Figure (cartoon, rainbow, N blue to C red):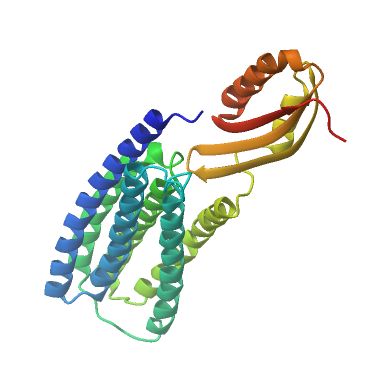
Amino acid sequence: MHSNVNDKKYRHDHAKKLKLVLIITISFLIVEVIVGIFANSLALIANAIHMFTDVAGIGLALVAINFSSKRSATAHKTYGFYRLEILAALINSTAILIFSFYIIYEAYWRLFEQNQINGLYVFLIATIGLIVNLIGIKILHRHAKENINVEGAYLEVLKDMYGSCAVIVAALIIISTNLYIVDPIISIGLSLFILPRTWSLIKRVINILMEGVPSNISYEEVKKSILEIKGVTGIFDLHLWTITSGFDAMTAHVVISDVTKSQIILNEINSILEKKFNITHNTIQLETYHE
């Protein structure tokens, strides 16, 4: 059976990390907006919009994690509300994708304009932003593969880290040459860089919503492992899917030759599924005959 205690502990840990990154990001976002307005810097305000997508994404992930952890399963929602995390990740990653295309569109038109930017202010704030991004990455990195919402937040912070580096380079070029066109060029490059990773996350989310086989589990390997158990003569109606991040499930009909060894075989199946594939939520129906 799936351990609710461990599951809640992991989600509590993930929520704590996200809250810490959210507080840091909001604090810097406020500073960046104020300085951007004061310096009349469009680049800083645009970067603040990037940061706002982080805040919105992390906030959405937190709401989903807290809601799914505190709301128990019901007669109508027998798995509880874990899928809210997946829906939040879909909304978040889709927003990143749309915003990236918008940046490319906006940057294209700015290639033909000469918008003056105060390079010194941009450099100072971008440097502070880089420090904030590095702190966020350090906090989220270890948990990015454990939870799909944490991974989404990690991708956004990673995107902003590269953005901060690029803005620092652009600021230095602007300070030394007044070549303002580097700003839209770097914006296009950054958007193109983040698109493949965001699209990969969206595909994973869609696979979960479509109840596809988890990407970390081989359908054929699971089938083969069960068939190799002594006393098992067949397996059919095998289904593998993901409820939410780190919570994979399986159902199957297993044909056995000796009904007196049902419990021994069932225990061995459960042991293999947990130790080899980390599947702790499964339903096995043992049968003695199948056409």
